[in-house]
Length: 325
Image 1 (tube, one colour):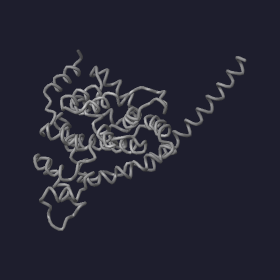
Image 2: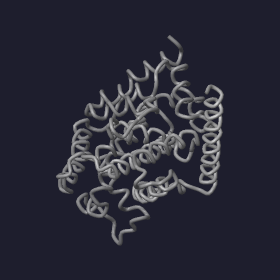
Image 3: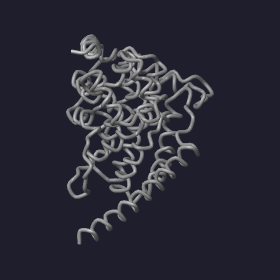
Image 4: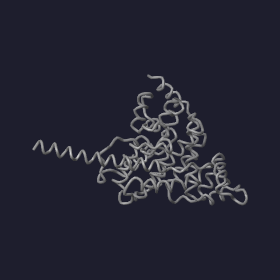
């Protein structure tokens, strides 16, 4: 057994999966996947978890809300936030505590939290466009995809550097994990999800979000599979875009959602609007915009190169066909 594998096993065994009551987490997940849950149910739940109640009150009293008088009552805080934002904030708070309990730096936790939230918003957006039942569940699936990453980040400084490396695609990252830890963040995330008591649906999505399927068809691919894969191609560290992964994402988005988004840029622009609105509500210090001119130009260049390569391949295929005939 390698050094990192032994360290990982030991860390995983000692890890406290949440300083919050597991029953509270279970109820939050139940509420978030049930449309009948109302604000009153959240208010009662928040009153039973002081740490979470404190976070909610902190957000509504922050600069973006600027209340005339300090908000001190949970029911008023939930009303100000709205049910959707209360739900997202509560679940994100649980996720942040999992990160910190793994032993990573708060700044790294913030970066990973932002990335997880981006994946959650993307998965929900794709699910709503596909008009699948229980679209809210996809938000949770995206949010929990990378539960295993904090352990790797806590144990290996080079792994953290890899997340910021421009050429570190999903495949490069997984190969590194297998070489150094003899497992992947998806597999470790599955263990954590099971010990947290998450429903089997989310356990499956965590384990399978980096599937290698390349021949997906609309006829026989469940929405849960392609949406989960698409969210998994977004960066593991926010704004650390990988062009190769984005090109793979464009293939999925246009194949399954081309009736809404003719290209990846259209999807990313809508995703950015939704994400920026949510992150502004949930974060005390909103991060800079996701998209910039440089990224859009890189995507344009990559698309031109891909188109040229397809044309050259067609010419080569035609030449071989003529020669063999």
